[in-house]
Amino acid sequence: MRRFYREAGTVPAAHGFGIALDGKPVKTPAKRDLVVPTKALAAQLAAEWNTQAGEVRPALMPLTQLANTAVDRVMPQRALVVRQIADYAGTDLVCYRAGRPPELAARQQAVWQPLVDWAVLRYDAPLAITAGVIPVAQPPASLYAFAAAVGEHDDFALAALHLATAACGSLVIALALIEGRLDAEAAFAASQLDESFQIEAWGADPEQAQRRQGLAADIVAAARFLALLRA
Image (tube, rainbow, N blue to C red; front, top):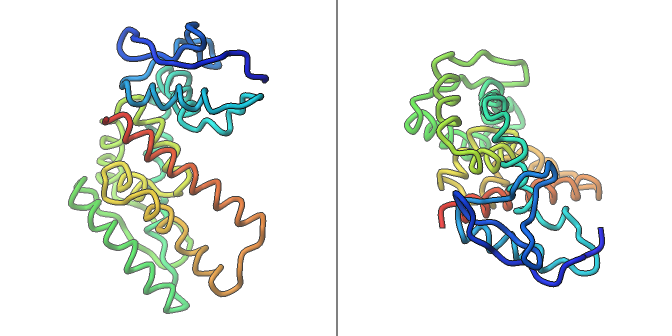
């Protein structure tokens, strides 16, 4: 849609801060009030609206999209979102290792095993490690612990965690990101370890490069959103 407003700004609202376009409060796609918990996050949402030129392009407003997701999707169906995120622990990327080549196996051990060890200490949630892609059953107590850890986050943090988990293909990596164990660059590198190894050997095609760029952008957006929630 074409830009129809002159200026976006923040306004105080019940339970947080809203965004206004020429003084008119912004609504989510589901017509709910777009209210976020912190002034820092609201200011960045307003900045996204202000940087739109002749046309408003939601794809260039990742923080606004996350805020909309929190209000329109997470709040009305929180239990479902928690379950969707927690389910990644059952088949987490970091649990499936290569048998060969040995260089890849060594790289996986060096990058992923410290994250698995961290998860054991942080959540008391040991994970079974296997070679290959055949699914391995994880301890029920560990799955319960991960679900509990996911459920501790508020609706806005859950929106970011959901995005990061899907982009990484790993709940362990996403939790390490939101807990500050990894930054966005390291989380992307860990989640793309196998593919990066193959690219080193064979190169990347344009479609693959574009997809990886999108995943990296999602991880960065999730990390920024979480930082602004804590500002």
